[in-house]
Length: 122
Image 1 (tube, rainbow, N blue to C red):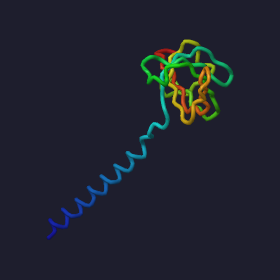
Image 2 (image 1 turned 180 degrees about the horizontal axis):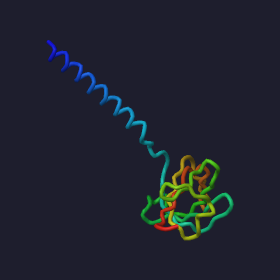
Image 3 (image 1 turned 45 degrees about the vertical axis):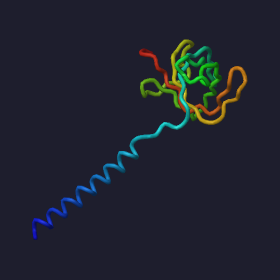
Image 4 (image 1 turned 120 degrees about the vertical axis):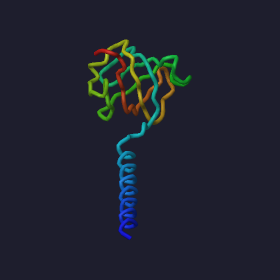
């Protein structure tokens, strides 16, 4: 009887820890929201960059884009926060955005979530 009780308690504890581990792991990974494309910075201003999409992108992300940078836009390099001043013309970046793209020349992206500098050195 003691063996059965110990086995049942062990099984319940094991199942409980597995469920808690799954829930904790699910919350620790943030899903990628939005669309990401790779580009080279052609020009920058006080609140935006002009980026030229690379050939490796989807056909819709190969043109020129004005990416508007707001206070909600995350700018980073190797998961370290940087500022717009740290970006230079010619830098390779990954741009993640949501929402609509205004189809003029260059196309305008208003809701830029993240600009990640992809250069090896900064």
